[in-house]
Image (cartoon, rainbow, N blue to C red; front, top):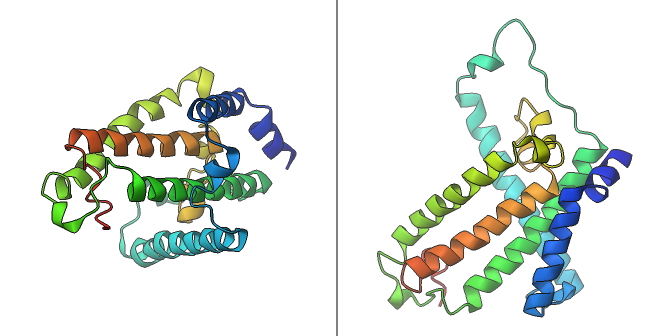
Length: 219
């Protein structure tokens, strides 16, 4: 647990992330409460939503891994006389997973609030078209990957790697589904989710004011 506290608190990447988040909140006039709970849910509903998202992610991601993985051939690096090393989950991993699951849930609340209320998103089914529907959804995936690729490269820079991305590479045999996928430093998680947010705005404006329509044709 000491390692978790040191890497989360006594970490220049964490301090920079907190400073940027605080600055953005001041600029937008947002409160910490509105950041965590944009839908103004009651505490029981907020917790119930968190649990529902967790069950959905674990059921989908882990269920997919458990169903598909045994049917796929093993990678060359996973076979041979030498046993494959698998990092054992420790207190730091658990702390990161708890923080990251909360960050994911807050992001889900924020992105759903954006898609429901933002004027840049087309929500009426009658307004859905090829451009702001299927093509916009494809563009969303492409733009997100285009943004993440340089971020991932930057996280491998020597000055950054030890503070953020090193933890994720401790696991050389990611075979535990969501647990291994989400086992990363929270700064990395926040950075990646921020790029999702940017990608939605880029596609929405590029696709003519309705770029996320393929994601949210709701009303």
